[in-house]
Length: 616
Image (tube, rainbow, N blue to C red; front, side, top):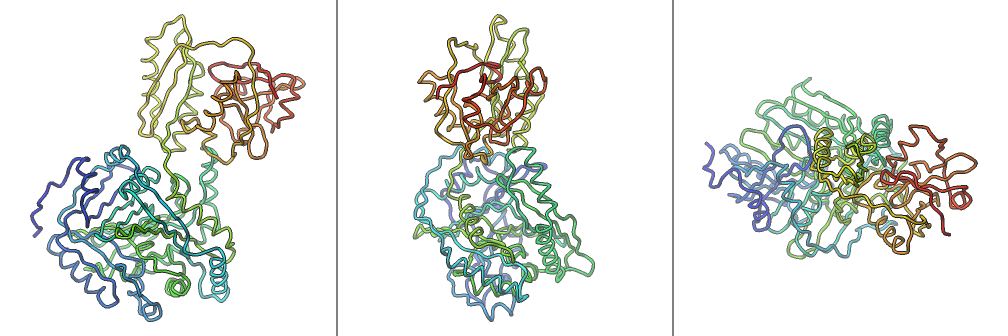
């Protein structure tokens, strides 16, 4: 019989944020990624008991107590640290020292959770202020020691002890301010299905994990190992090429299938013969900064399988150890300088009806509330051809997940409206916005946007031309601003900026509000009387103006830089190239090409094609 619930199953979003600030010993499991249907997030509050252990002898007893509560109708939510996996295997517990005060197992026993619609939680978190400071960030392993460890791993690989090792170091830092604020900030930056926020009383844990360890529904289970990555492209076309490259990569496929085989073997220990299936393999998922390769394994579990038996068979996930699993974990135990703690462990919940969901606790930060010290594990999959210096630099990049502030942005288009009641080259604008929306994961409804534009244009004075600015938010909401277009007379002068752009910056290829670099330079040169300012990239290749594309005419041909140099494919530029009324060629240009040109033109959708003069 289930216990009587002492609070409502659903509360307002204001209540949620207040509870996260004021309560302790809670577990919040947050689905922060758009998917099919309405996703739910769960807040477990006011535990009737906390079951925890940090020593070798009591792990089995902890599971027995937990399962007793589950049989009475309670829920369990919390985590297993990576080191708990050592206790499940005699071959590991005999050779790896477990001197650590942090819990191997921490689960609160709760009545029914509060349930929230995830999309509403996301909207509420957007409004929260960011109030924290990260100080004295450093790795617990320097490059010299890191290189020595990588060389040791390669010796193990050469000897046949292991094929791959997921080797972890830690980024440590001092923290001041609101940990809640950091969670909200990370959720704005990282959209994942398996985020978690835990307060144990002595520690807080933030997890922004994209990886599902397993989802159990009575005697059915799904596991979804994640192995294989590639950076995002710079635009939608490049993105699609990168996705295909990852899916077709023999190296990534080999690493993925190795982990799939390991996980099939693990779950096969607690499944009837023939009950384990690979549902899909080499799937590619798109995230904010990279693509991940995943595969999906399903199985039917043995009748009356306990949670202890399940975890003993499959924990920790093979995706965070390497293969073969036991020998690789032994090697990890001799190399890594500190316990991983909750990092690469698992966070989730178990319900009375033998359902539950657990993540693989990557992108996970552990805070000591007493000392204000914190740590984040950072892992690298080391294989025979891994380069230590390159892997160490990758660790630095991964730390930016934590240290870089979130800069929200919107997509926008600036269009010309003129009589008889139409927006000039509207389809070019909407096609570009739609591609950028697909790239960044924005909601986009073309028909609704067109209707909004028509409604706005209904109030325009037909004798005038208008500058119409269409702004698209990530949730699909749009804002339209319109004003009469002013025409500036006199000579049109341009100059070169002394600041360089980075052709690898994806934002250069999309029209977004994240353009402070351009806006500041444009304002500075405009005050000096210039029409626009021209940029070059890190290779000294000319790219574009702050508000224009550039064309130079030489010997009767109009030349313009390729988009690959790091520039926005302007709508009027695309229009000129498509209609073919003038001879246009794409060509990498340098300053001398601009200086020696017969004529120089700038183009955008508002001004069309304007001849300008360069001042050097």
